[in-house]
Amino acid sequence: MREPEAVVRKQDDGELRWFAGGGVHRWLATSDETAGSFLLFEDSIEGGKATPLHSHPTAESLYVLEGSIVLHMDGVDHPLGVGSFATAPAGVPHAFMVTSDSARLLFLHTPGPAECEAFYRQASTPLASTRDVDFSVVRAAAEQTGGMTLIGPPPFAAPS
Image 1 (cartoon, rainbow, N blue to C red):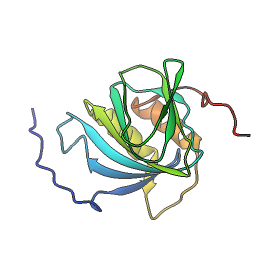
Image 2: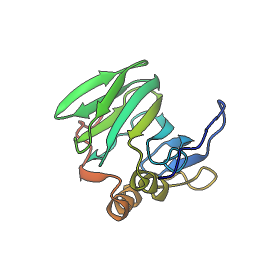
Image 3: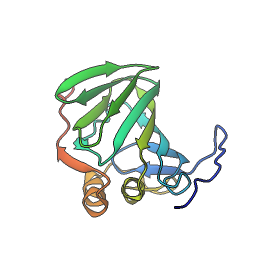
């Protein structure tokens, strides 16, 4: 088994990618670097973004660095602000919607198998390219990599 690499990234380090579901990812530790033990990235998101209801084959944890979201997990909506933390165990359906003007979230997948990283990479492009939200790209990446299972549309009421 391969050993994890030593990883040191400063505040503005890390690969920047535009995620087709909306948001800019800053990759902090990849599955490859951690030998699959975890995947860690920061997501900078505009207000109003809502994810489809989905699950992952591994646990996904999130920590709110800036802004606020509502997290839908196991059929319950949880308003979360700065300093809030949540974990969706493997296979547990969840979704979130940004309720502030913008938000920054830290995401941790444990373990961090290659499928999860492959999903995020296939559903994103280097930041310099397009910034169009396109859930068909997200769906195709999910189906081809197994890193996410789309369950349904966002479970949130449309903003009035």
